[in-house]
Image (cartoon, rainbow, N blue to C red):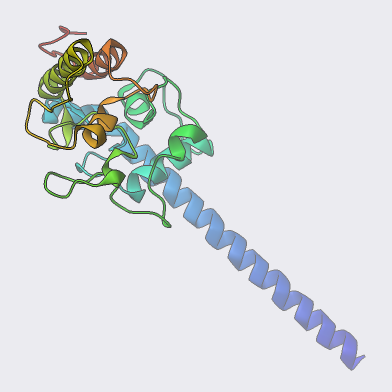
Length: 216
């Protein structure tokens, strides 16, 4: 009898622990979904105030790419929130520039086990800066006509160097052109050309009133 009571008490304790654990997990999931939904809902307002599209991956608009941005994409992947295809939020999180939001984008975003800041500003440029093609070539946290002009210059330099068999040079002063050129290959096809230019131009056009594209 005593053994039965002990086993019953133990079973009750286990069930209570499981219930608490499940409740905690549900609360965490609800919080993550709410935070993600709030960030997504504020995207248009923030972009209108900013006057430019944020760099790819920076869904919360703080000019950094961190695990907070990853959490929003995870919430979408796990079907906790909805992001309308072709919306600004959708475009921002499409970090591999393929027009889709899926786990291939998630693999490029920072995690708890990786650098919190894969995007590194001027003066601290390293390979991690090119893990994610943000489209922000002058490191000001936004993507606009300045970045498009820089990409155009890079394409012309590469084409010229190829034509005349010259050593590549960066028109804006960087010396390690082989490393630097990686960030300009937005679609990851191994080349920096008009396809990357068109992709960046299309991305910028998601800011209404863009001087490049016109009012959408």
